[in-house]
Length: 110
Length: 115
Image (tube, rainbow over all chains, first blue to last red; front, side):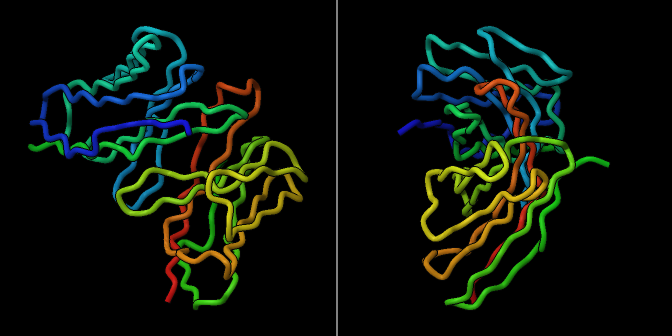
């Protein structure tokens, strides 16, 4: 059974700080990794994807991948109250399917 | 305006009834997916389809059925055999350019409640 693990949180950070969200996965053969943001009562929204080891930056977001450690993270710089949401990590599990973690709730206080 | 639509937004079902959830996309995506989300839980895959007239079971297919007669449409039927159907149902789609590199995009979801 392929597994994706995330700390459920909540992770509380003050406005302007860096939020660090972490995810580990069990399938060493996984090749693509995705971060989704989900506001309460809404559907997930794709914010980042990463395929190669290292860092990938997009605006205030940076995804980090370490395949040797089976670890992927998302950094949010200059966190805003509007970033308060649940962040879902997803890992490809073959045949175009994804396995999702349970998500980490992020709370950014003004 | 491309996207994925799901209807209805809210659905109430009596025990013993079958209900069908609609999912339509105009993104020209080949693959479509159905997920279920329970409170505090991640998304669990019910069924997926990579091509018209073909679909595969996901992790929790029991009590559900699907069809894929058109590329744009992937309806999900929740049957009376599904013992605990109250949940948030999400439809997604993606291209199938390469098997392991597919970003999935989600519709707005249908919230099903069994009375």
